[in-house]
Image 1 (cartoon, rainbow, N blue to C red):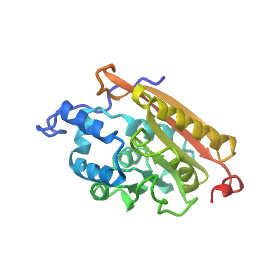
Image 2: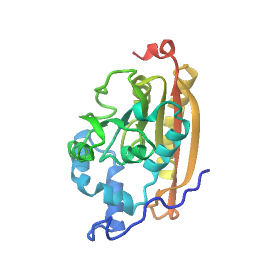
Image 3: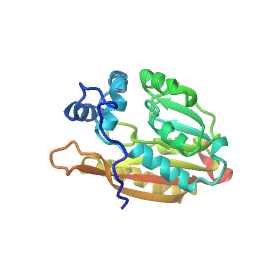
Image 4: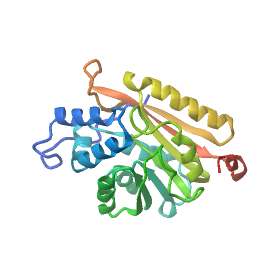
Length: 248
């Protein structure tokens, strides 16, 4: 299990004086609720302006860890690679990927306000609104060197069935990176996700490159949890065109 030193620290320069851990915790609780797609979008539109600050307060390490792992296993030209960032939010993952030399990003998210903030980073060549798990992905299949979905695969958010669309979006030989929480409240979702990933591997759609368990994923928000909850990063390589043609 990977142990990571703190990657984000709370400071007066980075967070609003009005944001506290309790407020950020309440926002995260709301994000994990099972509510209608319309209500979910409305929540994220309202959270958008404080999302980055709350990520710092909660010491959310998923974006940086996922970017580190992808960069470790990506062997082609990073500067030329096209990256699909699903549930891109405000662009936290793209910022981390940029540090590793990646420079071409397309972002998808259900929240229009989040997408505006992502667009304002100047990192994305295109951003498109899409309800993941509800809508067909508005991308050309088989066109991305890297596909990521970070901090969205969990109970109350994106369903595990999205995995097949991630595979379809990647080029043959492309990498697909996914993350999920491994705390008790997300345990059943994790089981379902891993069953889906395993089934797709057995079908020859992709092969597992790396699974990294992270002990300190983000600050815990439940009373029964310790200081940090754990998480997991899954990295898969998409198979050849013939194997993936059954998805199209």
